[in-house]
Amino acid sequence: MRKLSILKVGGAIVENPASLGSFLDSFHEVEGPKILVHGGGRSASELCGRLGIPVKMVDGRRITDKATLEVAIMTYGGLVNRNIVAALQHRGENALGLSGADLACIKAVKRASAQIDYGYVGDVREVNADAICRLLESGVTPVFAPLSFDGTTLLNTNADSIAAELAAALADRYEVSLRYCFEKEGVLDKDGVLIRSITPDSYLALKSSAAVSGGMIPKIDNAFASLGRGVREVFIGKTLVQADASSPRTDGR
Image (cartoon, rainbow, N blue to C red; front, side):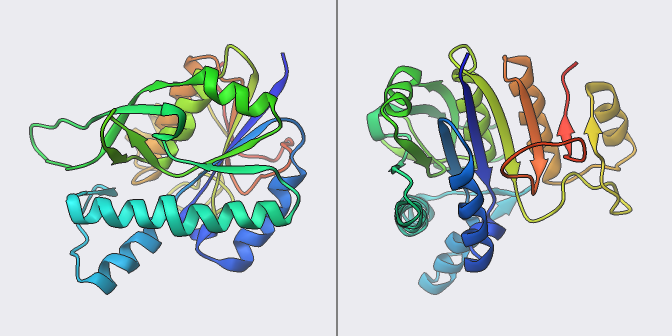
């Protein structure tokens, strides 16, 4: 099977022009079909502040009321996505900015919770793999904003989860490599030491000892879920173009 690279880039890189430029240079060098998924939560929070809209977060998840959803659409699907697409076009990449509503690529349901009302937050239920494959085979590089679609409304959706769902949905058509790219070297323990390889058993131990905690847990959960659904490999850290023996990775074997 042909290799497909799916890269998710975090907000700290997206919102730093120098870091983003360096990342996009490297992304352009990735050979073969590829997909980029981006965050941008800090930009959304900044715009909320300028508009006087309170920012509410629970365990790193944004509570998204109607006003916050409008900011998310403007920021993720507009400012951030358009700027990334323009920068990739400048580098000769045939990039196309997308939300989950475009071609009904990413369908979701509004998150239900007995304890917390997250508002207009979506959990992915279906990926239109046929439509995405047609784009890839036409030489298009999809650039996904973290917005899904419930058939009527756009929903704010975790970018890590979108990348994982895209990877799993395309794993029977491509040899998929999923990379979570952010500003740190990779998964760090509580002493700041890089953990170079994580297996399911070692992950349980790391969580129980609190060596891995906070926002890294859902990222690794998504990584292992992807591996369990046919994704070939997952890397977490600064590695962009190619993986080597020093690259932090999760391993489903």
